[in-house]
Image 1 (cartoon, rainbow, N blue to C red):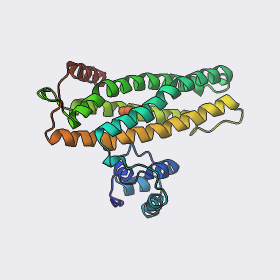
Image 2: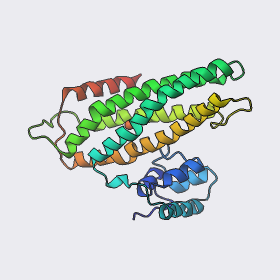
Image 3: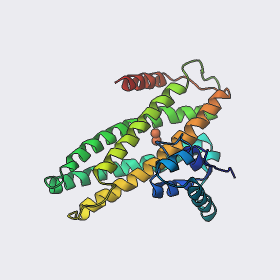
Image 4: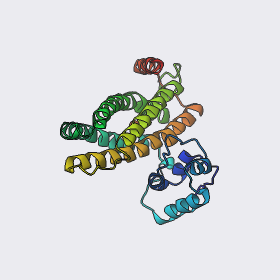
Length: 257
Ligand SMILES: [Fe+2]
Ligand SMILES: [Fe+2]
């Protein structure tokens, strides 16, 4: 079992101890946004004792046994899991929350002007995320499978993986920022005194969306992308379908705007 210390990067803590995600959610430590920062530094910035948090993490590791260690999975298993668990969740949840939000804005908008801003941020978030998932499913995931199990005769002579992963990481930063703004606009997903059932359900849905996105982005940023880079660096054949070039150009254009 890999050990963790105050010097371990927060994202790597969750790689070593998958149960740490729940501990970090409880402590409001965003292990995606500050994933490369050392645990001790992040704890101190939040007024927490790194030693106490380490005890909580080790306790979570020993008390829970039902979480899969994705750092040992193949690229095929990981991409299937991300698509089936996280992308399907988003495809079901984003339209539901969008409808709910429209209803809540029309009922509570006059008393809660921040809801209109929430709707704007949520709409942008949905559009960006939908586009992002398409890039992953149509370009990145098939490519990663090919890196892992190259087809005979595929061409490895074109651009590398780094450009695409940098673009997708940039998308992840935008997603995390939007989640933070939505959290702030809802006072940490807390229902106001006059909230009815729809309003409460919306806030619960947004909180669950945030939890799921953290787990999703963590899997990609801290496990999938490094594994793909390592396999490519080991000299696996990467293939070169022209759609990948289009995707990179689209990413570059987006990053420049
Ligand atoms: Fe994804
Ligand atoms: Fe992603």
